[in-house]
Image (tube, rainbow, N blue to C red; front, side, top):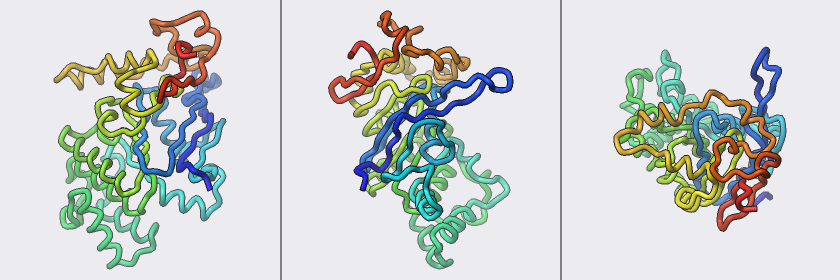
Length: 319
């Protein structure tokens, strides 16, 4: 029996670009992560276009990597038998960025909840209704508030809480939350984050995907920083975000916006940098063109993960 709930070992996923996609680049590049069975919130953070969502889809079993291994409770996710895959789908749930994109605009939202309870959990009507009421209550809603209503009749925060309730109905062990608060208002954002923190106390672990270091600091036990498809620093959230061992982590934290300028900062600083493929393909350190500490060695050889106290960091400064 594996001591880990989730393991990623040297996982890579390639996409094509250029004429008919004949040039391949690694959207995820030799990523390794692990989560013990003890409940925790592991954040994967970095700018837009760094590979976070691709990595999330790989964890969810939606996107098969070309290289590496993904293990859930010691079993290879992409080699699960039919019964094992059904259990994986039940225990590993997703919450996505856009709550309005999660639900069909022409379908009543309560049908999703009853469908999950009946088809995934084989509950009869009375049992399903009772379970749904209890789950909705946990996220601050009632059955009367949602029955017979379309997604357009809810705020983004309400709809995201309904999405959380739907994920919780299957009694998951792991939730992958991909930018779950980036499209809702500030008050709803804190509400959702506090729900996640409370769920951790109920033995549910999270992979939390974000570009928002403020929410990452608030919610995370551990954090992994991604840059151009690679995990370049990982460790306890306090240690990574306060001490910032990797030069990119320092730059990321120092670029946090001044009070009241958040939206402008997201638009200007955190947008994809034109998909600079040359950096994804670099044979040495991918951060060399920007790094203030670059050395000759950085150009020729990619740094492995070195230990720096409680943190692991891919930088020759620690070699």
